[in-house]
Structures are given as structure tokens and as C-alpha cells.
Amino acid sequence: MTVSAKAWNGEQVRTWLARRLAASKLDQAAADRRGYEAQDDYDKAAAEEWACRALTVADCSDDQAAFARRIKELIAQEDYPVTGIYDDVRFERHVRGHLRKVAKMTKANEGFEKTLRYQ
Image (cartoon, rainbow, N blue to C red; front, side, top):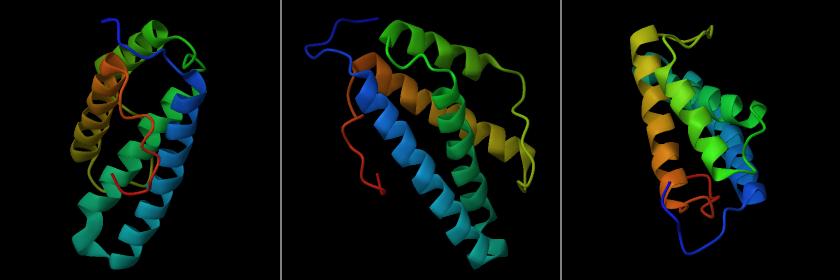
């Protein structure tokens, strides 16, 4: 872990995860209404929801190093059990992509202040 200029804020990380979890549910509903052509968007939103939920449940957001370890564990996971998605391979690729995004944010300790729905 690199030492950043600002201190790690676990509360801000939990807020960011909660907002992204809510946004991903809304994105899934919107993609579901659009139908067949939005299946990839649905899988992408479901992957973001899965990743945010897995990181929220872990309760390790108070420590930057523990949070980074949890992300690495999730990325190394063989499969991500979930129902209701369209393409398992595409879903797993999106989960790993979202986890890598959060890992970069964690390493740099930047981006968790952006809590708007669209990023």
C-alpha cells in the first residue's frame, strides 16, 4: 500500500458502496425494461451489485489494507454464484472489472467521494 496524503475514511467508503449498490439496482431495473438488447447492461449492473454487496458484507472498510486484501480475495475467486443473469462469463468478467476499479480506488485512496449515480 502506498501512503496517500489523506487519511482512509471507512465511513466514506461504506457510503460510496451503499450508493453504488442502490444505483446498480436501478440500472438493472432500467436494463430489464429495455429488453433483449440491454442484457449486457443488466449483467454489468448485476456484477456491480454483487461486488458492492460482497465488499459491504465483509465489514473490513475501516482499514485500507484489510479492504485491499478482501478485494484481492474476491478477484482470485474461481466463480461468483448468482442467479438471474444472462451470461455467466460476461457477468464474471464484469465482476472482476468492477473489483479492479475499486482496487485502484483503494490503492490511491481517491474516488470514494464521488457519490453521484452516474460515474
